[in-house]
Image 1 (cartoon, rainbow, N blue to C red):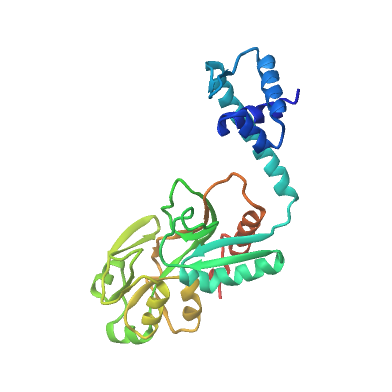
Image 2 (image 1 turned 45 degrees about the horizontal axis):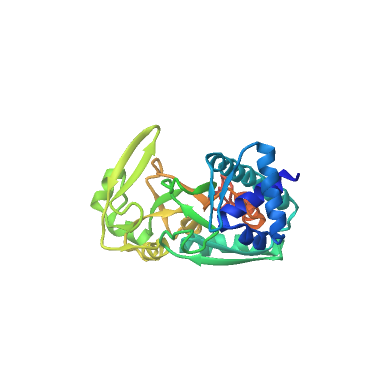
Length: 301
């Protein structure tokens, strides 16, 4: 007897409600379904089903057998999927979401390299400055910059996001430069709606400090704050992945250099480890390799 097939037949009969429906689902004759059920009962030495002309119902032994059969078949499916994935070339569509600024400046070029490397793949890139529901929005991968991730999701760190307190020379000429985090309370600080709207956190030599900040401009997108900072509107806490070129050419000045703003992780987030498709697996590997623990935007001048 093919015991795995017998288990599949037994589970199909229960899930589809009858031997006839199971036979149709499995593309076998009803007589063959009956035979597999009988052989499974003989092998186990237990009656698994109460059979009447109108319905089937499980015996106590059948209830226990059903649980174990589902577990065994589930493990077989995982094993088959793993073997198949190792042999597959990445192909097909993958839907990816990220914040606008990071997506435009760094993720989009990385994805362009990925699809060039794997020409059978396609990527839908959804850039939004809000957290989306991966299941409801049919998202395969979310690139999130956060330290407080949903524990029900799987996350792989791709890089670190460092920040810098900065201002344009024109602002500093008018208002001067803060010397300590506490001095920020006396300045016009441009804030991001979703992170650090009223507090900026710092560390120095093991000591921590919290600066209470506020100003006349707040935005839900860090690139908007960057442009306001460049024209001298105030002081901003900017990710280095955006601010680095402007710090290098002098259009922005790094402030409080002895204090390190709180760092965030850049994570690839997805819904489940099971049946991880080759496209998602290879894209995660590609992004981790491209960004890494010391991303290019933080490279020394």
